[in-house]
Image 1: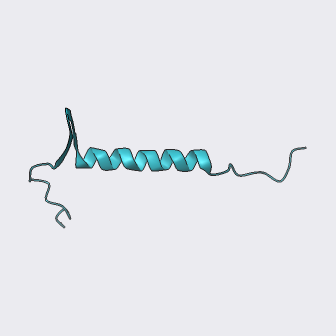
Image 2 (image 1 turned 60 degrees about the horizontal axis):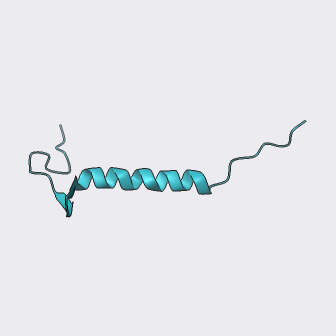
Amino acid sequence: MLGAPIDLNGTGHYVHWGVVQVSVANLVVVGVMLVVFVAAVLLPFPRGRGRR
């Protein structure tokens, strides 16, 4: 089998903001969720051919 592209046996990387500590992996997930949310709000809904 192929190995993981990232070493999963190492220690995690964390970002510190005062008393707030979050892992980089969780920060990436939150960022992607925010991008998807903003895209869902700003992109128009698909429209049908017209209502009868």
